[in-house]
Amino acid sequence: MSLNDLVKDDASAVFMAAGGWRESATYKPKLYSVGDTRANRSINIIIDRQEITVLSEDQQVPAPVWQIEVVNDSTLGISSDEIDLGGDVLSFPPRVGEAAQDFTVTRLLAHDHGMLSLECR
Image (cartoon, rainbow, N blue to C red; front, side, top):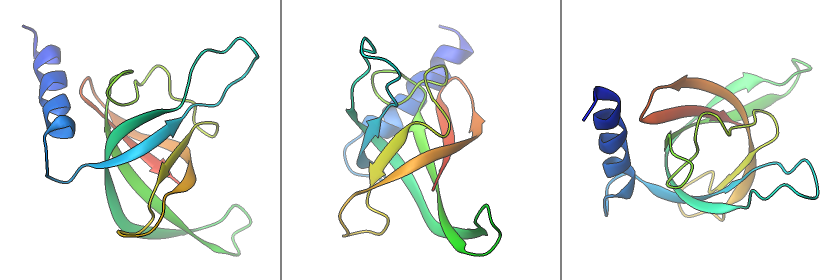
């Protein structure tokens, strides 16, 4: 087993283990054509709810930002080669106990063979 396989197995174990920090979310890939076969799917994520505030594009309005950790896998999470920044959406509760809302995946902050760190707005 390679180091890359070990990293991926460890990340998968974190996101699939009962309890812990994981939460359910819905990954909604942007579809580009009628024949696009990608579909929404339920995945497990870890949400950093610090709600870091940055200025919006027009530099006038504060906008909340969430950092999301997800396993780098096209079945259990989101793979780095399928992510569409600015097009894909993650649906999750912005605060614990609230209903899920849709947030656009805006940046890939970091990635390795096991995990992706995403910014959502």
